[in-house]
Amino acid sequence: MNRRQRRRDAKRKSPGRGSVDHLASAERHLGAGNMEGAAKALRKATETDQGNFAAWANLGAVEMELGRPEAAARAFERALALDGRSAAVLGNFANLRMQMGQRDDAEALYRRALAEAPDDGELYYDLSRIKRFRSGDPEIDEMTARLESGSMDAYGRMFLGFALAKAQEDAGDFDAAMRHLLAANRGKRAQVTFDMAAEEDFAARILAAFKPGMAASITGQDRAIDRRPKPIFVLGMPRSGTTLVEQILASHSQVHGAGEVNYLRDVVIGDGSPASGIPDGFPEGVAGLDGRRLDAIGRSYLKRLQAHAPEASHITDKMPRNFYFIGAIALALPGASIVHCRRSPMDTCVSCFAIHFPHGQDFSYDLEDLGRYYRSYAGLMEHWHRCFPGRILDLQYEDLVRDPEPHVRRLLDHCGLPWEDDCLDFDKTKRQITTASAAQVRQPVHTGSVARWRRFENHLGPLRAALGPLADADGGHG
Image 1 (cartoon, one colour):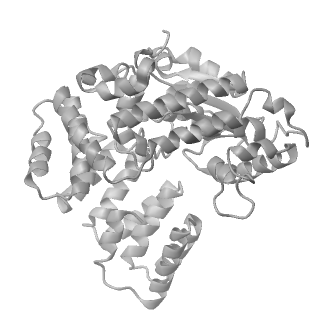
Image 2: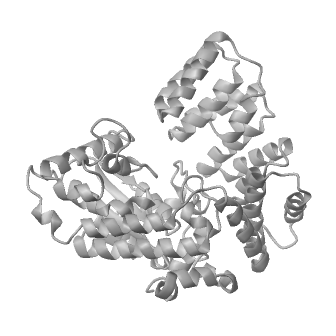
Image 3: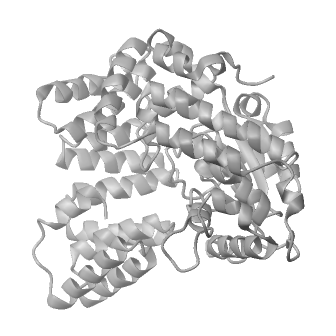
């Protein structure tokens, strides 16, 4: 249940006793991270009281989070039949339509939501992600006036700043766009707790724990290389092309795209359930694992992944941050494919800085943190190539968008998949995409984002300094 739904639900007339019990049960499940339990409780609430707006509204949000867009749409429609002016449900339904690539429907719903909540900065930001602005667009003036009016809280101003940055970049006023970006990122950075030194320490501990030749030294059970489903890890920095690559793979008839899931982190570090996590902790505890324990970790991961698509032979895991755990993948899942998405360091970091992430990525709201985080990631990737030569396919974003077919062929070959033409028509594939790149990946491949950072280069001194020599790395070879 998102921020706007909770606020809206508080204004509703109290439901009947049975519905109250089921809603309370749903809250408890959500608090424990049990989305399926929450969905079940909310369905019971709607069965007990079919006129319960809160139950339908929150059921739609939970079904959406669980990757069941048809069920989510039905729940949102029932909620809107009860209250067609709910900005919360209109906004969430618009997000669902956007995730499914239904841009016209999404825009119409966002505008209905804004008519009900004209001072909701988050709605402006959501709309800006699917609209193309031009110089002189009256909505730029409208957003500017709302930002300057002082009617929004800090949270709303932060979102409106990101929206105006997108609009001004579209319109070609890059200095104005960067001014809004700097202010929006300052606002977001003030809302999060992030320790870059702790991230660098974590990376240093990983470098110390994993050494070349480790895979050959593992003893114990057969490593079950052909176990199904076969995971395909698509990883790298956020905004490096991971969503694009997963969409290409998910367009293949043998591949299900699971999106960004935390299963690998959960089985390696632990999620609070019995026997999850590596004994003695990660990364230091890896040295004490034999083949039997590594196979158990691999089976635990595959069980979670398979729940997404029980019949699929290949399933993608597109959590970018899995680059921290490549050593665990190589040791516990020897049959897995690892695809590393690369992009120009400057473009990657500027693209991160230009958006608000729905979850995590707290390093991205400060230019110096971004540069340091990128350098830490780059050092890890160099180390993984030394430790596990041949296991990782590097796929360069700039090369992929300039000449897709040969690089898609390399990708499919690395994953053990036969060629299918649909992988070049990935923009036509119908599936829910929940990442920040949901709107862009619905477009045919293009080079419009290559060297984007040059639009803002006069403002990027802290980023260049933090990246060091990596700031001058190019973005491809074609």
